[in-house]
Length: 524
Image (tube, rainbow, N blue to C red; front, side, top):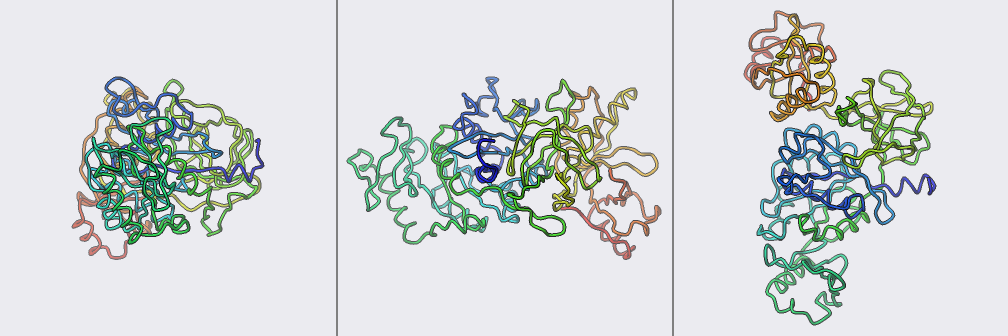
């Protein structure tokens, strides 16, 4: 490494972009990669009809539907910083994957569609960031279209999400009349649709245009000036400490699609986003990123990123120290050691072997079935485990079989691999060992079916058995099979734990009244 390791670690900025579907998250990711020099041509989601797909969407089903259903990891250098973006699924059916990804970042960028405001999926994802106390930076997108008034958007941010906001810049007009932003932080005006030296216009000490310019005569400029004065007098103050604690969100207005305001946002974001942060272990010890011993945790497992090789990649967020290819690590859960010779880093669908990485980076380990989501990996003589990652209680269930009985071996192998990715959960009935799958959303089943056919050459038959209330059991030894019935099916999960699948909340309450000694619990 060129720099000393402590400087390398301090230069890392690892974040995720969160949003409701269609708010512009994938487009923003593309533009950031473009500025980082990682790609020469930022393909937007809108280009999918022309066969020009977003660089960060690699799975076939994503290209067909124009949605992100997996988390990509993208890396580039900008302004002396090594930037790691974790591109998360936008679709709400994949919120569990997104939740786990948010455990691996130090900051979040929240994209808001300025015409729609704060949407349901944004609220869910925001809550996870809030729970972790990580800094949140807001980008009000699509200012080149007609939308809600800027002050209304900021008010909505504070009322719906309960976080205070500070406008780093402020739009001048919107839609076809969008002529730029008043940049409060850099004390300048950034003009839309203007390139070259006159892209930025200076402001004087009074916060007004310092040069004579036709914009001064427009009502949009006058309105923006009034609103900014109001924010200066009655709005929140900018407070770096409160940003770091996730109590105040800096707000930027712009348009990812037309690439307006993105570079200014990136530069300001990198200034205030935190370097790698300490992480807590199960015994509540904080692991410092600058610690010399290597440690990390697996937050995602993805099968068949390269369909030709049937590979499985375990994504590791490095928490402390440095990784070197060929080093030995231990997985405390199974007390096994592995030599890490096959490793990879990502730029969307391009991969390269990684020889060195430090705290804050994401690396991919080729996995032959040893790792699980949530596993801690440690170097040296360390022997601790990081706190568990969240797991959701599934709500929808299907009974699944192979259409061709002769393919049962491929069927079970495919299910096992896809289940280990964590998007769907595996159950089997006690004696007949029928396979049941549980998921948070319907789209997960569609993706499962699609991938079984395309990646494992197995067509499956799925029989929907509807929504169920799943509950695990603290005192399994007290459970008798006679407690199982049509309205309270007893099954086993993939770890051989007993689980009751109740028909509805009424059946759950009835069971609780009849068997008060059985202690039930749910996941997230």
